[in-house]
Image 1 (cartoon, rainbow, N blue to C red):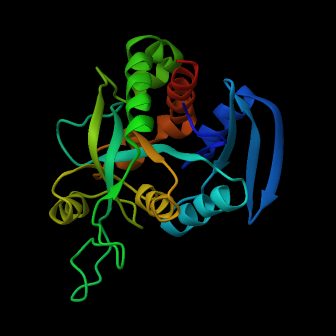
Image 2 (image 1 turned 45 degrees about the horizontal axis):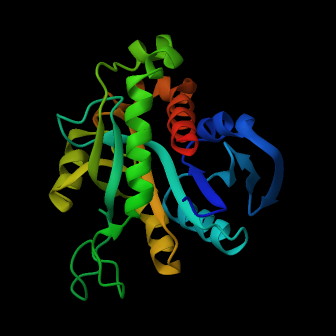
Length: 251
């Protein structure tokens, strides 16, 4: 059973735009420069919101959906850059944990350890993550390619998989080999890198709210990144987000 209301935070406005048409009896509440869209999404009471980019924005949005909208669970969705050769464009990464790769409060705390929380890897909810992983597999195995149309080939997607593992988060776009290797040096187990997930996970952890993170790989976190992400801005991110969420909530 998914705790309600469910909050879905999109790292891209294109993802939110793809979900809003599926909301029934939608109401929009504007606060702090954000639009919170509430309604019933595939039978589940849901709040959908564009988080904005970066850790501070993600944390602020997550706190808002918990404190002002009473979110019973939070799911963060977006794109990410691959950190490994075996994590390809179009793969869907479901977080088993998330790490702030740019957090370093040493010598008082170990690098990447969140001060006063005694954790370096922020946890996710096992049930939410398991359900999302199963939904992503069903989406990729059925109509993902047809739904994507020519964006599939333009994004360089071949045989996408669902992968579980560690996601690295930091307040910097990673689009060079040097930066990619630097992230891996700090978080050797990370599969991909993005800019919001660990911040949202930390807020949920402190509030005791179940959390999960879904990331679609858009690029290889190298110099080709700006060109590779274009199909995702042009609609592919929304297609993946809506396809996965629909299968998750409809079973």
